[in-house]
Image (cartoon, rainbow, N blue to C red; front, side, top):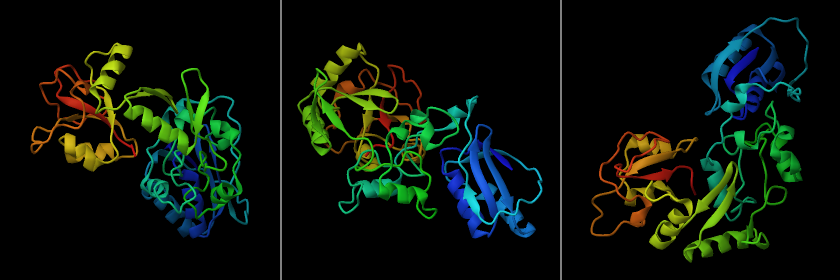
Length: 329
């Protein structure tokens, strides 16, 4: 069978593998430019169960659009395996369906656990989160076709990648401090002045001094400034020639957003979703006697609230909102 839709880069093959093993079926699965191809053999009742659960219990970010079935002669496979995907000389527009996903709750817990080997490692990810589209060089979606091919897996990451019971099983961007990308802080001339934890601390110190940082992300550069510092915000606006359009904000948690902004359930759902879009929120009017923590010039000339919680909606100068980005930590 061929499964089409959002089924690459979302943990679909590991899901198929585990489902087949649980039902005692044999065969194989791989990625192609047409979708995920599955050859499955076994008892008829279990095959019926397999397809039903395939449709009803896919990974959280998967979206099945169609399943094409075809009966073939038995191959008498002795086990179920994940095959190496074939080359894709003619990559299709399915590339646009591979999303970058916000860091999941499991990875966030590891990020903040001093006893975890990925503690404070900014590039951690798993099958349920992390970069997809931004690291892709070619289809199908396999590590050799991504920018991560330049980072050979260490023994620990390779063991996770090969373990069907691990949530990093066939997670193509998998990485850790031993084998993955590293953080560096560069000065204006491009010289490295700090690396690793020292680079992160150095960046924080510069932001607190009111400086502006260019942070290289997966899809380009982001300009960072301290949103509490009106002078830094003004400098950023002057350099960008952006006099009044609201600037995007990053908060550590929904609880901290709620201190400055009105929040509805749909807005919270958007901010905490896997896509974690930018959402336009209304500033709080009742601050209990305290002042807003963000500088007024983050979203100046605001007079009318917007409450539709539409991600990526372009505000006008009359919108009394601030851009808040989901997925931050």
